[in-house]
Image 1: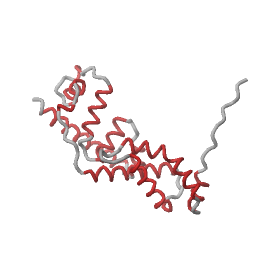
Image 2: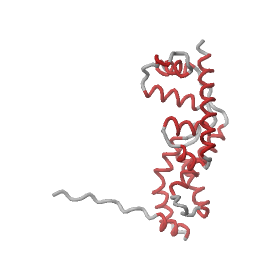
Image 3: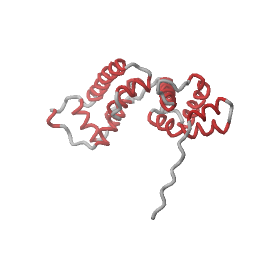
Image 4: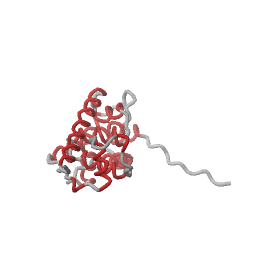
Length: 203
């Protein structure tokens, strides 16, 4: 009879936080280790062009320890939720600091991406949607999204590419549900304008 797998003990967040607040260095290292995968996932999804992911992650953890006194496990809000919002805000600030967004040209798009662009801008009939590979569509979307302001880029990436619910985006960003919907509506209009401008270069 095979031995049952040994499960790792559940991380005791509350106990660890108490020890961190008591200046326990081991607890601080344990907390970083526990949260590191979550922080890096967010950083890699929203990394500014000129930023190093480890530097941005370090900045997030510095802010975390500086602001830890502001966190209280109330209303069922887990620490991971609070840290996610902090990480998202830090990434947005870094993206805004870059200021200059890339100028997308038709030469930057492959054949499949250009076919999707024709369809997206309404140049091709809806019943003639191109049989474009999902990777080409996603790549074209990412390139167009990169031309938008960081909040617009973020809300469309989460809603349309990752399929996250509006309530989750509201919780992660601190925006109200109505604001998320309005931002998404306006961001989609700006995305279409960017696509139409790019399409105009092909005419």
